[in-house]
Length: 247
Image 1 (tube, rainbow, N blue to C red):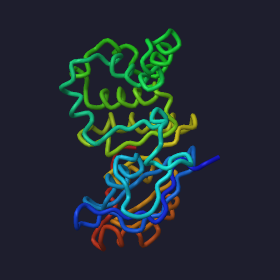
Image 2: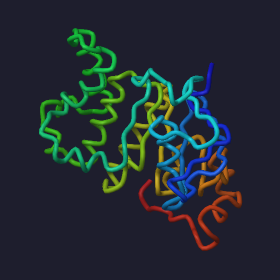
Image 3: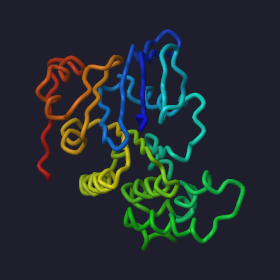
Image 4: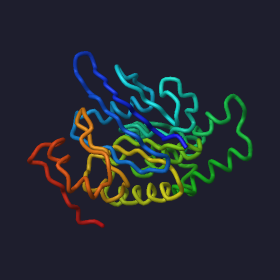
């Protein structure tokens, strides 16, 4: 079985600014990986390279064994971009309509059939939005909009869910519910790549941590990460873990 993501000696620069330096990283299918690093460390750039939205200056990026540059099975990737919930606040569409968009890659030019509507219903139920399916997206809370976008990815029957700091601006209760949802999806076999700014939160929930600051400083389990020198190498000696009171 091919890895979900495979990067080999990847370099990327914006003009003269080096953003990613010689990164090699493999994400196996079924893994839950947290990608962390300080602001400006190249996390979002690395995600864009993985998704094929940017091309590396050097090195290779593969999705499920195929080059990210020519990967055509876009429905296998569910992407929730940074600040997606903010943009959703102005969208005059219903939750069901948003989630149904996830079927378009599968349906193509054809009309959705009963089986497609059933997939949408299942996705809504998975994220606990069935009762809100006819409500407009701009009338939901940030946490609810967040779940709607994840349901859209589920409706496409994605194999990889890529999330870029999806908990920014979401309250602590919604964040806990969000991580509970991700844990269930991971348990069901979904591969998840999550960029998160809160180190303490992410190390409690993911299987594997990848820590970058242009270059990869660590890739392994979260317990060993906290015991390693990678945190101070990537963030600086003064950085510490902030422990939260909520479980």
